[in-house]
Image (cartoon, rainbow, N blue to C red; front, side, top):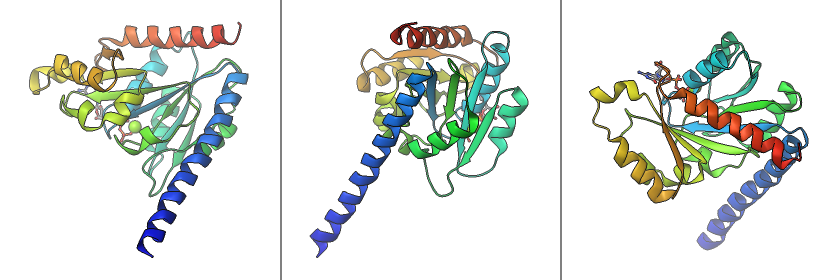
Amino acid sequence: VGRQAHRTVVDLEASILAKNDERAARNRAWLAGRETLAINLMSAPGAGKTTLLERTIHDLAKEQQLFVIEGDQATANDGERIRDAGAPVVQVNTGTGCHLDAEMVARGLNELKPPARSLVIIENVGNLVCPALFDLGETAKVAILSVTEGDDKPIKYPHMFRAAALILINKIDLLPHVDFSVEKAVGRAREVNPGVEVMTLSARTGEGLAAWYGWLAARRAATGATMGL
Ligand SMILES: Nc1nc2c(ncn2[C@@H]2O[C@H](COP(=O)(O)OP(=O)(O)OP(=O)(O)O)[C@@H](O)[C@H]2O)c(=O)[nH]1
Ligand SMILES: [Mg+2]
């Protein structure tokens, strides 16, 4: 009986992930059909996802409209911050859930209705574990690690840092006050994800943000190029 119950749990997990992957594939096709770049922004709680988005919306206001899907267990606080910063936003509350899934993103996109060739950023629930396991149909995953979390996190939570196309080390304005080696963090990130691009920045002071904006612009150009634009 024990073995049977175990098997049922394993089957259920596999079926949840299979259903999610199928929905994610439909999101990906929907985004591709609209030549839209979608970034899944992930980090531990408080690493600076919303702060980076507020700053990005502000700094790119003249050249690039951002559309945002905000994931949090509870409250509309981050959604309100994004709206105040000037971007269309849909807030998704996951309740007890520790991550967004592809169905939530499908509903978010349906409500947000980004026009063709948009840039959509999905702020995932603050968590270093669960979000890495769920494909949302995004074009790329970006992970933020802030210097107050410790330079050992990439090897302790390898799935998130392995899945990321880009790792942003945030809050570098605090480096003089914390015991964090950028060199060690980058080395550990590349232990789990060889060759991954890493940038250091401060969403507060703006240091390093030009490289992030350059990365976004290059990804947008590549999204168009692969679609024959
Ligand atoms: N010193 C410093 N503080 C920062 C920086 N970026 C964000 N913060 C602060 O870190 C705290 C958390 O920032 P948020 O942007 O809310 O973090 P988040 O990742 O969106 O948090 P959750 O949505 O709860 O997961 C806030 O007090 C920010 O002001 C930075 O570059 N430097
Ligand atoms: Mg946030």
